[in-house]
Image 1 (cartoon, helix red, strand yellow):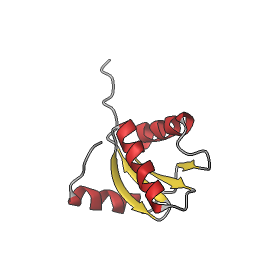
Image 2 (tube, one colour):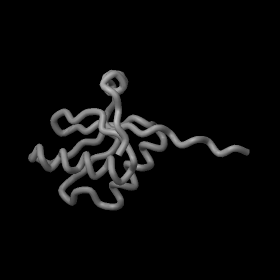
Image 3 (tube, one colour):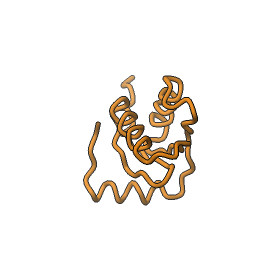
Length: 95
């Protein structure tokens, strides 16, 4: 899992303010298909929001940690049922 400085986290929160969630995690939880969709969204956009339909705060915190560990991303913010995650875009392949 990546870490961010407080200044970086503040800047990413400001950039993410206007974003809408790219991916939703429903009743079946974090399935491999959902994790793959998050991977695709991170590769395309670097900074994404994820909506979680889970009423337990602890469950949402655990999902955020699992996502960041599995995809080498950094947690930016957990606000209500919205998780914000950042990962730098992969380097373009040299041609």
